[in-house]
Length: 479
Image (tube, rainbow, N blue to C red; front, top):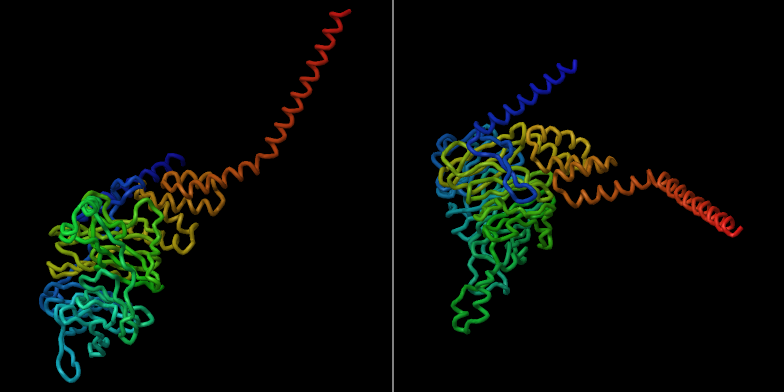
C-alpha cells in the first residue's frame, strides 16, 4: 500500500509539472512575479489569449486608432473608435449591437472629433471625452443626445487654461471627473448638473536633485530659462464600487504611479509589500497608460513600455503579470486600454486596431479565488487553495503568506512562523513569534518555576549541609 501511495504522488507531481511546462510553451510570453528582494521569479502563466477581434471581423470596418474600451455591467463591450469618430457596441458573443457615430444636438447633426475617453454608468448612460471639441458628451444607451458639458468656468482658472478632456469617469452620485490634457492641478470635477466644483487629487511635485542644485547656484536669468518644477498630470482613471478613484501617472520615475483617492482627494492606496505598484522593478521602469478596478479590491495596470498587464490585490501585492510587446496572438504593438468582465480580461491595441481576450488558466483561477476568499476574511478556505497554488508554483510568496495568516488565526503559531518566513512577511512573522512565545510560556511556566524552585531549594540545602560539615570539621580540629 505504501508503494502504491508513492506511485500516485509521483504521477500527480509529473502531471502538474507537465501541465506547467506545456502552458509556458503554449503562451507567447513568460509568467513571472517579484519576490521580497525585488528579483523577478518565473511563475506559471495566469491568463492565456482565448480570442481576438478586429473591426472587420465585427462587421463595422477597420477600427482607426481606437483609444478606449469599456466593459459594462450587462456584458456589453464599448469600443471608442477614435479615428472614425464613433462608438462600436458588441455583445458577449462579440456581435455588433449598434454603432453610434452621429446624434441630434439642438436639431442639428453632431459628431465626435478625436474622442479619447469613454465611460458607461450602471444605468447605461454613455459619457464621452470629446477631446478636440473640448467637451464631455452624455448619451442615452441607444445613442440619443442628452447634454454636452463644456469647459469649466471659474475665477480660480487662469486665462491661459486650455480644456482638452482625455478621460472621464462618473460616480454613483453623478459627479463627473475628467482627466485633462496638460492639467497638473489634478482631476477636473463637475457636479451632477455639470457645474465645475474644483480640482481633486493633485500629484506632488517631482524634481531632479541635479536640477535643484543648479537652480540654487544660477542667476535669476538662468533660472527663468530652466524647466520649472510642476506636478505630474494624470493620464487615466477608474472608479470602484465604493466611490474610490484609481489614477495612473505615466512618469517612470514616480513612486506613486497608481493612486487610490478618497472623496477628499487623499491617496489611501494600501501598500503592505516592500514595493509600491510601479510595474517592473528594472532600470527601464513601466509606464502605466490605463487602470481597471475589479472586485475584491483587485486592480490591473496596463504598461505601454513592455505591453504588460500587472494585477495587484487590495494590499498592493503583485499577483501575476501577463502580456508583452510582439506580433503573436496575445502580444501587443501599442496597448492603450484594459477592461475585464467575469473571468475575462480585454486589452485594446491602438496600432493593430483589435481587442485581445484573455481567459484564466488553472493557476490564474486558483490565485483569483484564493485572493477573493482571503480578502473577504475566509482565511481557512483560502489556505486550502493557496496550498494548491504552491503545488503549481513553490516560489509564490503570496501563497505562503496566505497560509501563514490562516494558521495565525487558528492559533497554530509555530506553523504560521514557518510559512510567514517562507513568504518573507516580517510584520506578521513578528506577530506570530510574539504569540508563540506567550503561548509557550503559558504552557511551560509552571514546569519551569517548579524546576527553578527545586534547584533553589537544592542549593540552599547543599549550602547548609556544606556549612554543617565545615563546622564539624573545625570542632574536630579544635578537639
